[in-house]
Image (cartoon, rainbow, N blue to C red):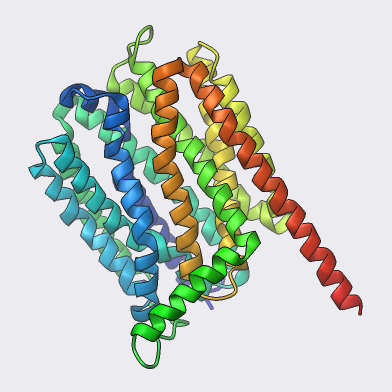
Length: 408
């Protein structure tokens, strides 16, 4: 196993973090430019959301197929294929001259991104020591937030001055260089054993059984739902804030509104802290804490003041990444078999919820401005807290059962 502090550990964590960084740079490249693209294509805010939703939704529905494929050929190959597809698919966007074609290209990008996202944590779970896994997952998710920040800043600033096509070309070049770096640094897997008889119908049936098994394991499914609702709130509160700041009375330019994504840095810090929290405290209480911080951020952002909005976004990021890191690691740790499939199922819930949540919160914005967003967001937060309490209660029941069994 790869132990904390070794050269292999440092290379592996850096390579995985870089891959995660590339994935999220590409996934969120278009998020800050949604208001400008809505004007360019003369469509509503809800319709232009397809530029973001197409990528996240296609990513979600292809996570499990990628994970299943990794059970045959291994995690290492899947991650590299995924990363080298990014610049190729990115350049395809240059031929899209309608919203429909650009949305299709973004959907293809989501499929390419799904390969790395589906199996990276499973690779860690198989190759890293138990201590190294929790720290590595925190680092990996910190890279998620950094990738989201840089991708959005790059997309917003470059699009305002040189157009979205230039942003796509620049990201494609960067993705190719990054993929080469991951290829050279990431250690090949040593603790993965492919099926002896290849991957046929019997293996597909086995994977289907694993999926059903994961969904029947209550603690896993609750954590998946928590991750999904948490993400639906987090990413789309930022999207709505972008529309809010480019509209009167603020009327900010795109390059300035893109700077709100620097608030993601607070999430980078709390994602790292989640690894420490999980070693010292209860993970489910941490999910409740993260959700509470995020909720406070939404309410503070309701104040018509730029400093209050920024503070609100900082708190939303801090709480959301803390909750996500704990829920994500929970699924990876609690899955008894087929860890790649389990983590892929978590991400299915995560990104499907993110896609649907965008249409929901943007509709709340169109009909009720930020007060409508707060009202709609409260519905999701109530559901989020309920799920966290259920998971906490279930964990306590399991602990009592285990104690009774050991006593007898």
